[in-house]
Image (cartoon, rainbow, N blue to C red; front, side, top):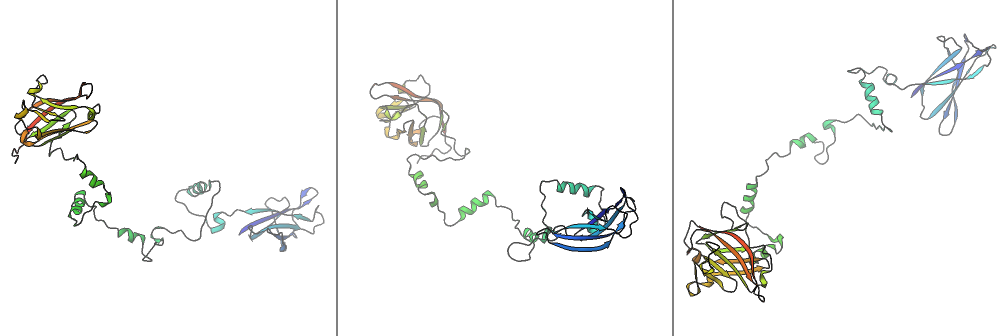
Length: 343
């Protein structure tokens, strides 16, 4: 609801007429929806504006519903000296400020806080406010789910604080479980273990890598199984493929420490060949177009010395007889295993 101040001005001989004691007002209430007219105030007495003394007269209408109605006011006097005995009254809406609403001025901790806050709040294109009841704060919000009436704070306090298990604990729990299955991997596990060559990665502290770059390391008194990859051409097309290990690159093949040939197996061993060696104790294959694999049984490797030597890979073309160095190789190092037993 709002308060409206109506004001009328009476003139006599072009000057404001003061001292009129019989000025009254009639107010019509107009329904905004359909312009229905209703007499709201009839011949109510007005008050002269003696402060200005310019012939003005005032009337105060309280509890005006401006959301539903509009208001028209007319002031009348019976004085014969005025130029017009009935005038339309102007209206002034009294602002709906905090004082008008509360009846007292709001207090503030620092002067200007309320004004600055309202300016900031209302400084938007289309402010929208919804207020059904007093705002809820903190733990007064209704809890979702059962039990009804329990507080959110209680739920938070009930969250378990048990520390997350360590990786070691998880692994131990997995391997301690009675039944373990890898069926979710389909045929992957079977494919890995059915493959002719399997490479397993293990910690560096346990066994030195067999191949590191171009260099190879093998243990004496152990079975050798080495695969060299990344060769430049299709080794499967060559009639002969050699892998040769020598103490010095200038040594003849007959003085090689070990030499394998694809079709013959072990060809030279400890500078011996032919009937003096066992060709079946070593083998050379080409598992792919760009790799060779050579093996040597422990019964032979135990006869060698711990040395750092040289090796290469060479092929001979089947029709042209062209000799091709497939890999210049690198260092080939043999080391004694701590355990030398082979049986």
